[in-house]
Amino acid sequence: QVQLVESGGGLVQAGGSLSLSCVISGIFNINVMGWHRQAPGKQRELVASIVSGGRTNYADSVKGRFIISGDNVKKVVSLQMNNLKPEDTGVYYCNVQTPWSYWGQGTQVTVSS
Image 1 (cartoon, rainbow, N blue to C red):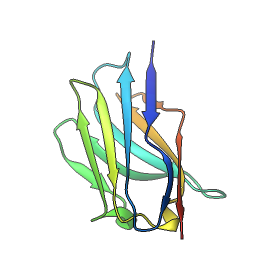
Image 2: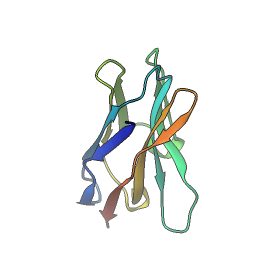
Image 3: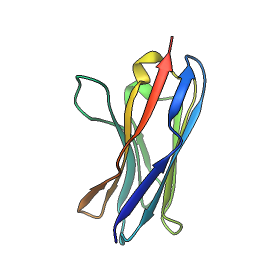
Image 4: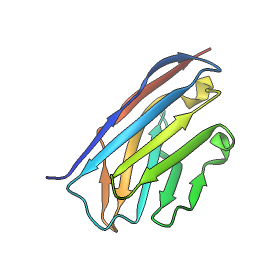
């Protein structure tokens, strides 16, 4: 059974930190693990991704503030978010590509000013 279980969202003041985690089960031959987010009224966008070789990719808006890490053996992908800004508010989704694409249910991150 395919499952992507996210945890770690919440409410934080601007400048604070949050850590998201996604535990993956039932998916094999993972090529890419990542986090996307969707703010109210906006399209879902890539926040950060990590490929099986360890190379990472970040949206320009989070570079220097967010750090993605992934373990393809333990099948966990995490996102450390530092110096959070109100514009980081949104629902954060875990994504895995095999090349099929799988999504978690999302976890809310709210940053107050």
